[in-house]
Image 1 (cartoon, rainbow, N blue to C red):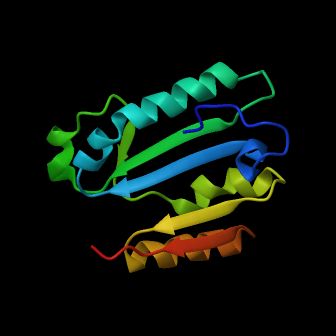
Image 2: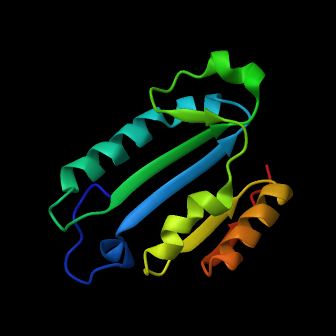
Length: 131
């Protein structure tokens, strides 16, 4: 979350207009752990709304394991199941702005993310972290 306003032309982040986080997880502890960060990003986005400064932040959380529902502690809205990535990415494609789909996760989700991004004409990047 950008806490300080960047000076004119000081970084690519200052040109950022919108961030949509689509996060799919089996275990809700990941959502719970990032609750303060979600709140901060949403509050910053709300404070900047209509000012022409800052960026818009949208959050789309997806919990894939129904049995884990009772462990969700986040106050953020979430959906159950797997997201329809193409329909969630279509607004980025229709915006006319350059958009990047950044993926980190299992191979199956990578393939689905890549296919949706490329079909919609969006840039795609993936990262893999070995634990």
